Image 1: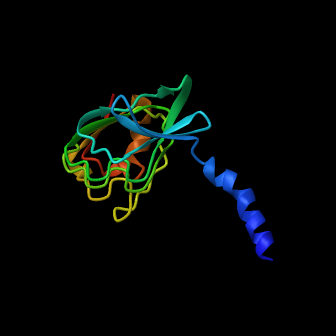
Image 2 (image 1 turned 60 degrees about the vertical axis):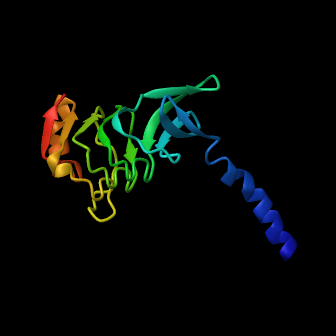
Length: 161
């Protein structure tokens, strides 16, 4: 019995280890996790500040990865973050990604299709961030969708970019 459990654990280990092929601290000031030609923005312990522009893709070790998500707590407690630019390829922004970003005044989201987010103000994507005082800049064709979808609808202003 113990041998069977051990064999099962050994068989599962490669699947767990391959969840992220590479984990690095940063490229051009932004930290990422990489998997299957996709990149996820992460904190990596960084405290982002000022204006952060997330690129649509990054190249690491000769491989180009498309940025498709912003991970859980990626920008948590980045109290000096004033603006963030999210590329159109981002389809998911995890819970608490922008928690406690008290200086955030502008979010530029180029995704025509609204990224999946957590809208709950208690555990949501923008938890404890005063987005009601911030401006959300989105593609002109998508303004109505963002205005009708929480948490995006809670921004103080939603304007066409």
